[in-house]
Image (cartoon, rainbow, N blue to C red):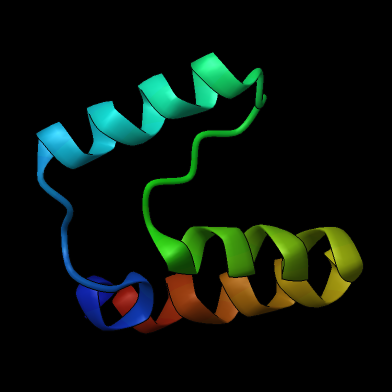
Length: 62
């Protein structure tokens, strides 16, 4: 279920590459999975809606 929500797992080497690229570019966030960037943008745009969605998601896991 979680993989359906955020996508497939990413290899540790890919994560390391993204982290190193972010450090070299001086970026604060190193987001190795494309969906995480979208989720962060949605969270920032409407925090109340994001919290509500996370509550629904958590309830679906129980």
